[in-house]
Length: 426
Image (cartoon, rainbow, N blue to C red; front, side):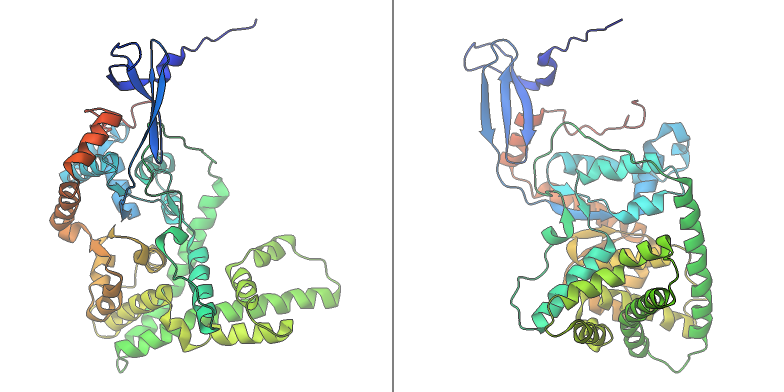
């Protein structure tokens, strides 16, 4: 049996309602909002008019996975954990809600959010980090590293480019006015993904334990020694991976063996191959000469000038220094590699970051702090949560009366009410 569904188009016209210029009834509501303007339409006479909206300059605040998790547990009553959650997370959710809806901040999501949420309530976590991202998300860390390396390499070759900026690293328009509707696509999570993630984390942790033991024995080294060692390690590892994969592929061709499709696909999609091909594009000479020049660059001290490597090297050097001189008795936990990956690639492009205590302490280590101060990113954790709330208060105070009135005119007086029932709706 056929079923007809009738939709009243008036449902798409929402408050706040004002007097219609044409029919004079108080039915002139908001039909749609886009990045630079909004449209009002009358629910009675259908008269429409478009209004422009001013440019925005939102603060970019990165919320580490642990912060997303705590806020999710705080307001997700289905988990029945709210009684055990620090009240700070309720207050933070409320404040971020208000600033987000006032068009003053955006909290972009990242690939780290997705991967780190696979092991605990992934759908609920996704709901939370997408809520504050407004559709803005950082490129994956491999892409960010490649952008930085290519920009530096081109500069070294004498090409004048503008420096890598926030908009180059982010997808989505961070400074657009919010629409009322949120669209999310669920791509699903395969069991294999979770298994592979656990295996990878365990393997990295096991390797890190051995490295940590080695650091503990290196009593004569200083921070600068580890910094140089770690700063050269990344490029060297990329060059070695590339050479190994290339040699393996060549051996298969010479011997007439069939390709292992999975291994071959992994190679052609690997960070090292994409990076080296991208860099070799800017080098003159035959293919072999290009590759030699690129590999030489990746193993040079030039890489210490590139932000992701400078930050990561300083963080690992700090851990090594603590291990050798008694400041750290146990190796870093399983999430440390991911945390350093996140910090090193995203920090330069954020106005502020809320991270866990351990990473906060590392970033405030004397030598590390010197390295990251130039990026002017404000760093917060639960260690200085009062300062973070004060920072957010200052953002709210910075909004002009005209801006606040415009938000109320477009969205309504109750727009900034916290979305406490986010997890109660189906």
